[in-house]
Length: 619
Image (cartoon, rainbow, N blue to C red):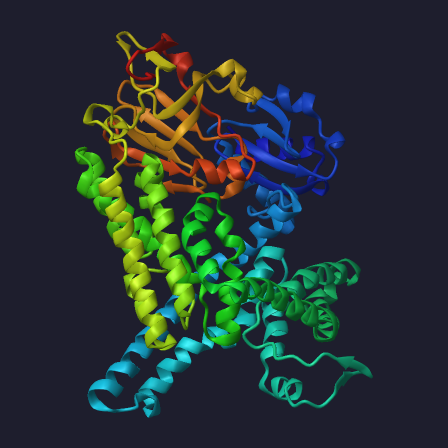
């Protein structure tokens, strides 16, 4: 295949370079976002030998190429130049609320490691101050070493607008460095002194709202969002030869005063309103708020809804140097660890016991997903016990006024973050997490759960026990292999994607998964593991080449909700977990998780048929 020639022909027949506003690709297809789909020549594209099919779906113009799609995509990208980047997706997909939530998530997630590191350092320093004062009656805050490390722990929060501005610019596709200059202006010492002096401030005779923008979050997000449009406006009207100088200059000249006069105050008031709403509930009953967050936090995690309230804690730390949101969330984390520990001590299933042990340890260090998805939610009752215990522990923290001096993931390592709250508050935090952990463990052991018998453990083959069917291959000797995904059978012809339903990619079947896991159906090599983890290619020992495509349009999630357990090129044994995925989270975002499984080289085999087993599903 001459990739360059194919790329040029495809680009010509989707309306040319000027008709393309976005381009991505997944495992089998090019995904164009076109300004006008009427300009595309579908008939000609479908006549091309290299094109399997053309699909218009979800606002995208999809050209199905097959396993050579990456090479063709790269050549088209070269032809497009800087017009399109691989990260261009359907920003307009989903409800307004969903888009706002996803945007905030995209902005905050990259900064969380830095926030966690600063938080950990704050906790260590707080612990060191207490130990030095108690044992040696020394105030280490006067030492240069402490001051340097204290500056390190506070720098991120003081210059938060700059960090947020950079990431927001990447999200909104604006110039990152100009966004950082805009944010740095808000933090510039002379401007900070001017804005906090108490005297009236004007810009060209217009009154400027007095505010201290250091450590703020929302004002710079709004400002960069507007800046992206201002920048594009100047790019359109500025001659090419002057763009490199004039576009940044004009953008700053417009955005700095606009931010100080309009968008900054809006952000300040919006952030204040969100905090006011949270703390008005806190004022009504801190115990009730603590119980609610402590109980419901991990339920919110399952649906990804916890991300909507994370900015409250981040903003609190940036503004006041303390937060209680994650104190309450800590009760939830420790309760998940406790429930998993209860399963560990009670289950008779050796594999579940091993999984529970791992999940308990990781949850104690703040990573709760293995406990939630691998143990507690799977067994149902331990999840209920965790919610109850987390609510009790969180309620005690709310009553005691527990708070942390940093925004850090909740686990053993972050306990020092809560020391500075005072004796009563810190004791309530310690007792709260103890109640959450030991309460959930005790309830799990006393009240029990429906254990998984050894012979029914899905991890034996990476499968479930449903009486369903999937494809099998036939070479000279008929070979039957288990299905890699547990779920409800759907004939391939009924799949709502004509590329798969037509059999263009090969024969097979589909399932709607009931368990978020893909396991090796036989000894095989992982030939392809797409970066977004939604598509997997396997080369089985019997010669079959199997494509597993988890859901439709899930490439847009960019790997969110998926986790890889192997790498491309790995040779793995039957039953090895390949990819796990969060069914609830992906469904909550509106995606269809129907998972086609096709033998892509079925034309080279004697045939592919469907077999139904009374004990498992086979492929």
